[in-house]
Length: 433
Ligand code: SF4
Image (cartoon, rainbow, N blue to C red; front, side):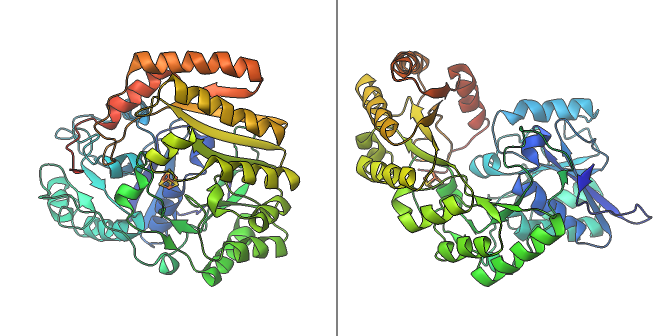
């Protein structure tokens, strides 16, 4: 049982769309894109939209879309089609499949042989036009011809060029206020029963390895008054006591006001990721008061290399941040790093270990997550080649060193990262140069 659900009855003439998260339900309930489409489509009187996940729900519509957060979800996509007995060959099937999400925005050719059309940019700017077109024309070929003209829709074989469409003012865009969650959840639901609050979209930083700046050219922020109303409505409607703030780097000019407002309302809150150079003692104090005990940061690598890859933050800033955070009572720090970066040799790996050791002075609990660097399309590193041998070697060095300093860690497997790399460039035609 989920709450709250948008209940709509089937009746003659009603149109239907499924939005699919090609991975587990316990992660998918926190996906904002799914919630945006679910709320948006259901806001039309004569439309019904249901969510489908890898492990929950069945496809029961002729028109349905997937959101791709990870390239490895490609395998789940095929699995879902098979389980729902949907023909893979788009020229032979009657159903219309579309796809969007970060993987598609970074490589719109990703699944071009299976998917009928792609949504590039913000769903809010594109989905209403798709709905209008579908109401007017449901014959697949005609519908595809028609929507190929919409900015932000890419129909392989028909569209002349790739165009993204973004909303300009996030404050004027309807918020996905209905956020269904199961009545009983277990610890796999990492954010617990919470209301997701997207305060801004995009990121002002330009890390060379990140795909986000390649398609989101600027940061759009929701204004404070609008956010207050969203919080009020969202908490009441969903009956939640906790808010999870969605933002790529938490740069909102009113961020302190937002946190203070949440405290005034007696709400618990958490912020999944922070840029340390952008976070002062006051903000950290407010986050602590909001009930968060673990902080998550992404130093990525040693200082010199960090500058090279475009993350211009000194070690000193991280250490200062750690000192303030531990004084304020944060118990645990989670840190994300990469191996196999361009110009990263054994020396840089050992520097990285030294850097991590410094945090032991401030935090009893340290959790380190290490991922092989996977070059992505449309980034400045798109031509960089992953090297299995180097990655395995660096992985071994870290396992050895981490056993000496005694921290909790996880190093992602090299083979799955290589698969992710291959998939990221599936059918890709470069647009970077
Ligand atoms: S701060 Fe994070 S989201 Fe922003 S560009 Fe860098 S890696 Fe990407």
